[in-house]
Image 1: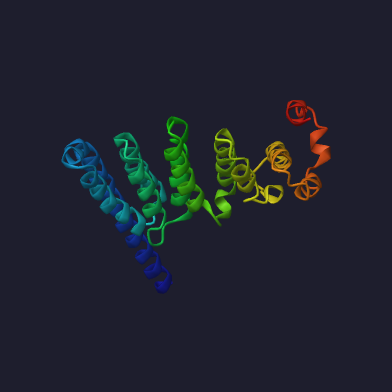
Image 2 (image 1 turned 90 degrees about the vertical axis):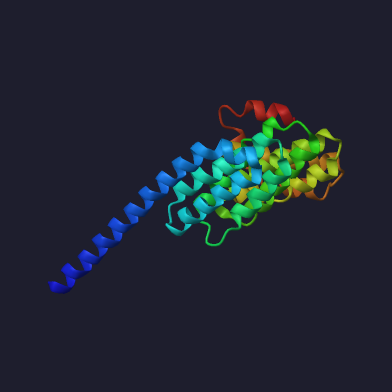
Length: 231
């Protein structure tokens, strides 16, 4: 029909316009990436500002894969500059941008996690962990990453003798209903909760956590190493 043909024509024109805008944006990204050393020579913020303009364009075009390419570059600039406070600020800023897609927020958190093992200073590592935990809080699509971050926070606090802090961190997630974790990962986390509860003398919580452990999982082949760690 005429109406159908007109609708199809509008759709084709819209799709063509979008494709052209994406192509133009990719060209702009290539140009800015090539010029980044010059921008960064002036100041780190100057380079970041150039990329933030592109990030907004990618967000408006609803192109998460392009957005992630840009946010990855911004976070790399912050980390490689050694300015970890700026890294934390950019993670917060980028994840809070208006209408930021879940895919992009997920990409920001995952990228931030790649820096953790390279940071030896306790305070800087704790600060990045806190930022990533704040960013992932309440987001079901990041529950697996949040569990991993909490395990790292537990290890970090315990390494400084802060058993109360480590035990508190272990209680920040209901790991038994975390679908993003495997049965093995759930068992490991729960056994860690039990161990830390015992270490701080929280004898009320110990039996409650034991009830959450799936004993059938512990009987499975390949779980012997976990049991040996906690027995």
